[in-house]
Length: 262
Image 1 (tube, rainbow, N blue to C red):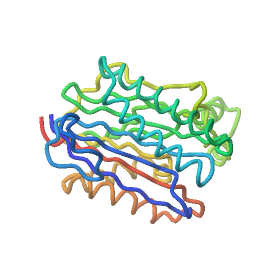
Image 2: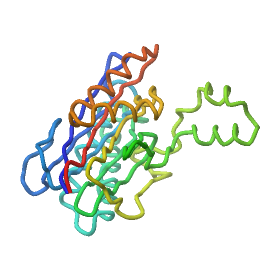
Image 3: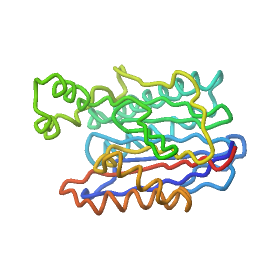
Image 4: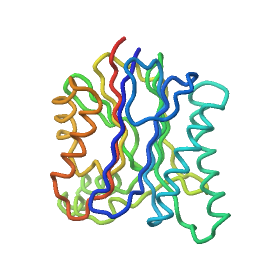
């Protein structure tokens, strides 16, 4: 199995960036993190975080979580799920250390997706509402759980307790039920087993700014640019977000991984 990858970020309508993302290719090759990957990497670890807590706090939280997650994953022992879990705990502890060292940062935190791409397939751990998508053969699937209030509000609409129009407009949709804040993590989503990948698959890690686009729009972009590689997909996704011209567009960051061979 071989993987190509790319990462792109946009500030959206904000004047600052609270998202962070890093990818490590060829774990034992010492290649470091990168924004665009070499053809045919046999394994990848990707992590993406969407910060919260204001300009300084959010940016520090996301960058710290990504850096510490990758460092911990590479040095942890055990199987992939154990290493992903250890890396999440270390990232969370690093946030706690930041707040302890500077109480003015109290309240900062981030969402986090950590994903391992290897011979067995895709395995992940995630906290928050940053989505992890699989695009395969004309379909798109959300792989991880959404830890915002949006699913709960949609359940109310499905039960007839709220109109769908009111549900979609509810300002609480983006309130998080779980995040990496240095304290107890309320909800964690984990892959139950490795997800086998196929040649041509595209996996997208994203911050919630990508949700300006409906899933069919994300699918369309991924399909149209699949032949050009992950760089083209990532750039086209953010261009589509910008073209939507949301008045309060959030930061949007994507990591695109394409399975280039098997």
